[in-house]
Image 1 (cartoon, rainbow, N blue to C red):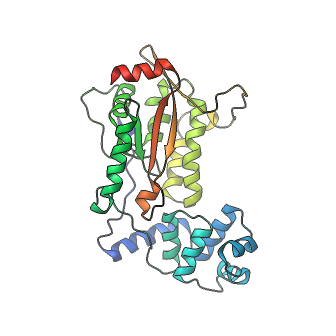
Image 2: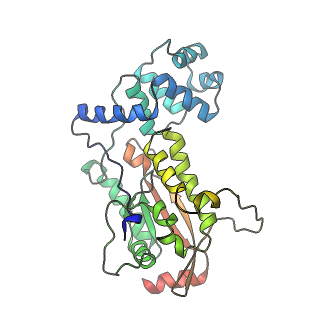
Image 3: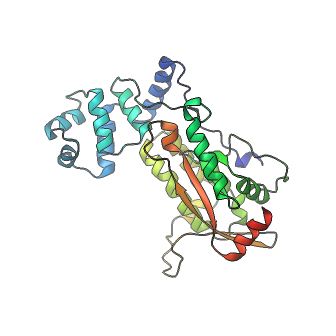
Length: 297
């Protein structure tokens, strides 16, 4: 597939040794926030909450919130989790806030292959199979490929000029880089300028959640540095005649495909990995695209 399409998957803690995990998470903490007070101020500002509104939402006095943000008061573990719920903070960042305050993480980060996630893996396999003959992918929060169904693998091999029998790598494939790299899928995207702005929106959300110095921020910088991306995302599409969704318009070898996607997440997750999984399902936007996938199936 070439080096341009490969992005190493972010390292994940095994959880085998609590001390090692805490150390790794603590290292991540310092890349995002200096201390708990800074993290709380960041998230309150990001959500657009005043101290008064956060007080009402969390049932914690405004005075105490002010003391927490100034460092005059130290939070308890339960209070941090309460604030995390009130501010709808991602589970990964709740762990970061706990570590910043001197507590152990509350949410585990398992591998999808771990026995505890067997039911989740089975559900993902089922959803991918049900999407056939159309493509479907499972990605993590940075859009690293986790799983794919047969039609998705077929489409990616076709777009990347890979032999039909060659399997896709199980690790190291970043979907955003594949889509935006001019040497990869982008050269077959007729509307890549519009698609670029839409795809960057997803990673921008992650970068805002993680803060400066994070993996998400680093990936965003890499994507924006790709040729033509910064210029393509400067001008919004104000055409009132556009469809109610953004299609992927693909042309290769005389074939034109029009696709749109739906993105789903797992409900009520209590594991960082499960919380960050995204299931992207592709659907045909016209009859010719539907027929092409059915014939290839």
